[in-house]
Length: 200
Image (cartoon, rainbow, N blue to C red; front, side):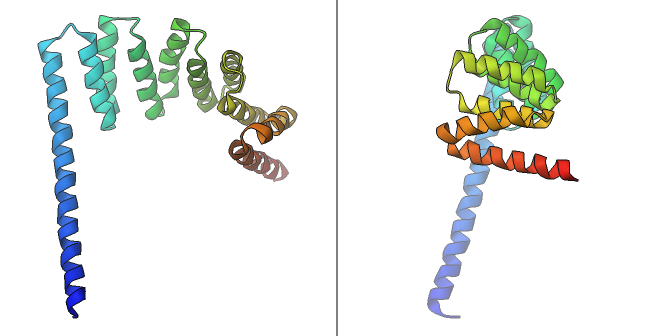
């Protein structure tokens, strides 16, 4: 084996060892951060923000069941805590439990009915539930409050495609071609797949 090959191998081994140590340190940091958040809850059992932060810590580690439990405790202490409704909706959405996500995202819209992003998030839940009319209504509301909401138009077109309303989907596609070519191309794929499916 040549000297430079030995040097490269030694460097590779040293780099791999360093990366392992960094990974272990990151795991250790996350575990210690969670312990700190748990301690804050134990020290302040009546503080909804402490439960909310603990839930976020669990969510960052994709421990959604524990995150949901913490968020629920935050809501029990402060029922209109908007951030807890958002976090619960997101956690259930990440678990693909769209029916549960719907409850919390609807509440968010009730708390701030002029917020486009809340309507958009609610529309996304309806889309995953296959409730296309409700999704379209939510996306329309998002667009009404923020006219050039390209993603809302795109998702609304996907709903129209799934309902078989190609005329509306094509109208939105023409609009997207002027506004957002990336989304227009993606929508073309959906339209093409729907056409292929109808021919089978």
